[in-house]
Structure formats: C-alpha cells, structure tokens
Length: 365
Image 1: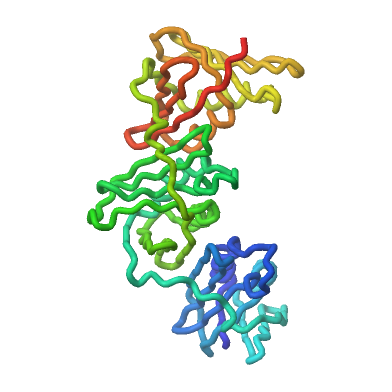
Image 2: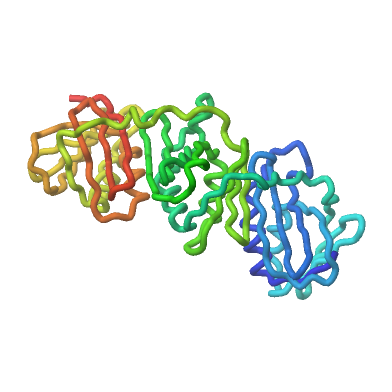
C-alpha cells in the first residue's frame, strides 16, 4: 500500500474520525484507525463498537491496500510534519513508513482484517434533511441531555419521525428542550429512535453548512451519511417518556424578552450563585424584571432589565445555568417566556418550532 496526500487533507480527515477512539479500550485494534487507499481516495474509519465514523479524502494512490495505525499517534505525527505533502508506504507486516520533507517516521500497525466491520444499511428506513437544519436542531436540544446513567433512555436525543415532521427532544427530568422540523416521508417510515450522547456530539462536529444528510435506520442502528463522511451508531434501547405531558397547558403570562440582554443579565447576577444556593429569583412587574441572587455566605447581586410586560407581578426562581443554556444556543433576537404561577414550570419559546420547559425552584424569601 502506498499513497501521497496533502497534509491539510490528511489532518482534516484524522480530526474528523479520531474523537470516537476510546483511550481506555481493552482491544488494541480499537485504538487504531483503519486506512483504505484505492481509486484516488483514502478512507479512514474508527469505531468503539458503539459509534463508528468513516471519512474519505482525495489521495494519489500508487498501490491500493489497507492497514490500521494508532489513531492518536498518527494524528500527532501528521500535525507536526514540516512539509505540505506526505508519502505513506505500508509493507506486508503493516509497518508504515511516513515521509514528509526531511522527516521520516516508522509506525507499527495491525492488520486491517482484525478491524470490526461497520453495520450495513441495506433495508433501512431513510430520511433526508439539510445538514445545516439538523445541526441547528442538535444545538437547540443537546445541552438538555441527561448525564444520569441510571436513566439511560435519557442519555441521548429522541428523534421522532411522525406526521411529516421530525421532533427532537432532550430532557434530564428538570428541563426539556424540544424542536420540531417539517420533513416529508411516507407514513410507513414513521419511527421513534433514541440517538446516544456520543453519537450526537460526533454528528454535531461533522455536520456542515451545506448539503444533505441521509439518516438511515435499522432495528438497532442509525447511520448519518454526509457524503464525504458517515457516522454509524447503536441506538439506545427503551421507550422514551411521554414528553408531551410535561409541557404545561395555557399560560397566564406571555413575556417577550430580548434574548441577548436577558442572557447577559442572568450571567452577571449568577456570579454570586454558590453550590448551596444555586437558584436565582426573577421578579416580574409591569415594565421590568429584577433578577436576584442571594448567597448567605457570599453576598447578593441584583439587576433590573426593562421589558415589555403589562401583566400581574410574579416571582419565580430558576437554576441560572438551566435558564441560560437555551438562550446561548438560540439565535433569535426575541424569545417569549410563558408563566402560569410561581410553582408551575416556565416555558421558553422561540419561533413556532422550539420550546424549553424549565422546572422552577423553591423561592427563598
């Protein structure tokens, strides 16, 4: 096997696939990246047996072939190479000779035959969506994924394909982020799947500003085909809780807020929040909201923000980090906070397709 490739292409491809590689694997082959050179392209693949990523880049292939090399070490070497062109030659014992300008490295690899094959998606359900749209949906929901491993069905994002729409939901039990996107597909293709956190993170990294992604689903696997790269993942097995029932009904107050100003004010006030007192109060009165953090052992912070509000006075407390998360990940200038009373969940809405349910905390006098 022998190929020549530009440093930029090689490094870009390795960076796309290397995050999947686990640093604590018992199987040596899983620390390696599979390299396949043929027909003017180099294909790189990594997997941890749950998530796998393949990426293909142009290369000048003199002798086609395949091998596996230590992924992180290869990434480090390529990053430091001095010249823009890299020549890689691999012998029958999977020893790779890497040359670039005055530099020469010899790296010991393992046979490609030991590398686990990624699943196939021959009879899969298929959905197509713009990459930019899917990336936006992931950004608006992924921060609400639960990290509590005892509730494993919440350790990912629900993708619900139903009624010509894709609904994506993430919740950790204290907050819930949901986004809906119109998507055409036959009724026979309707399905709910839960995509695990690691796959969500990798997908967010791979998605670009243009082009489509084909989502293919079989019984226990999902594939995201982006053309030049492919992500495959096992799905989380289980039933996602009924998220619709936690969305409050009719709200009493609908408060328009300037997203950026509101976010900055919460961020400043939350500087005085401690682990013991990690809630901040929002005191809504006609024309303004006062944001207050009180920590008995640290001090107090207050900030008043002018808002277009004419309703009754209402005081509600939220976890500041949970209040800021959606504001950071939305792009709209204005959002709407829907409130019922001090003890009911608040609902933050943006446009027609995003909502965020946030459980209130006990209001300290």
